[in-house]
Amino acid sequence: MSTIKSNLFLLAVSEVISQNSGTVFMLSNIEAAIIHGLYSQLSTLTTYGLDHIK
Image (cartoon, rainbow, N blue to C red; front, top):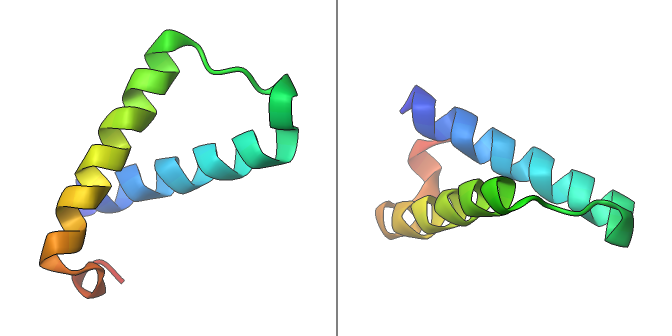
């Protein structure tokens, strides 16, 4: 579960950075693919319930 926790942390950090920087923060294709992967991982986790991660 530690890998999942760190991935969720990276996802949260990416979200904060992209929101704060707005259009100045442009994702490269690789970064976008990684974040897309984290989002799909996150949506898979919600079926198990996020309470186990906290």
